[in-house]
Image 1 (tube, rainbow, N blue to C red):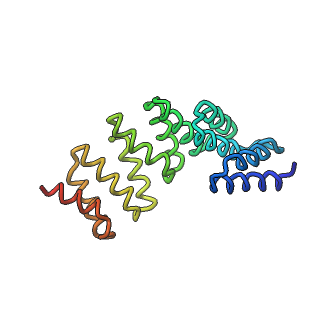
Image 2 (cartoon, rainbow, N blue to C red; image 1 turned 90 degrees about the vertical axis):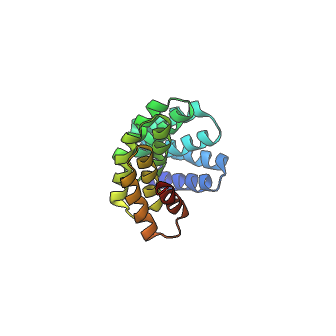
Length: 186
């Protein structure tokens, strides 16, 4: 099988996965995975399908296979998601830290970090990663709002207020920021 065949099968797998046709996506990903050369992407696709089917054991095996071929932010985040679902929260948290360390814009890892940061009382470790994301995309109000929320929980209210004021200034329609700002002034 040529590299072109691999690319076509991988792309078809992605298209069918996006459309929610898991069986067709799985078939194309399997063809891509069995092509010449070893690539992590088909295994990531197959792992996503396994997660959607609730087969966490298989998903973990597939993410691990992709990780072994080439460790990326996506493989760290994927393994982290499965670990989180299995209740292994501290291990998942560390995997998400590794994922955003490799790619500060990995939203799956970033959102999971925020969730686990609250659950594990580890928001201090989350704040630098939110700030890192905002250094790349400072206009992302949702991330800035999450940062402000973490700061409120950490009793860093002045810093939270500054973040919220910046959101309201740039995006007056962002109601959650206005509401949290009002709560801080009470």
